[in-house]
Length: 64
Image 1 (cartoon, one colour):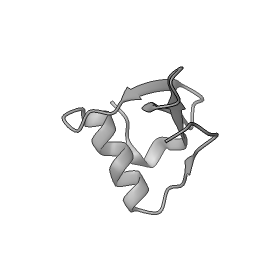
Image 2 (image 1 turned 180 degrees about the horizontal axis):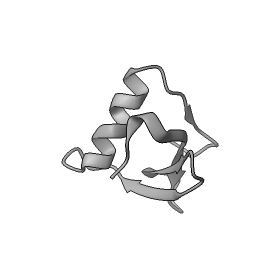
Image 3 (image 1 turned 90 degrees about the vertical axis):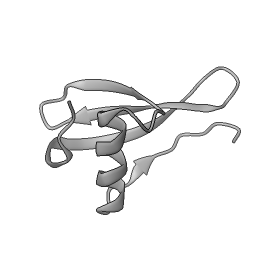
Image 4 (image 1 turned 90 degrees about the horizontal axis):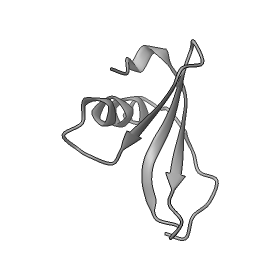
């Protein structure tokens, strides 16, 4: 489970159709976690909280 205090970076991940499908989270220990766009997922909720608290999501493209 992701702790908002340990998130280092969050990046949008796109599928082959250029649709945002998940987030890649790197924590302060450089552990990488992929989180689907699912509002029931506790890690997704933690990311949304982190964003609301001022966290910036890396967005390297996609055709949305």
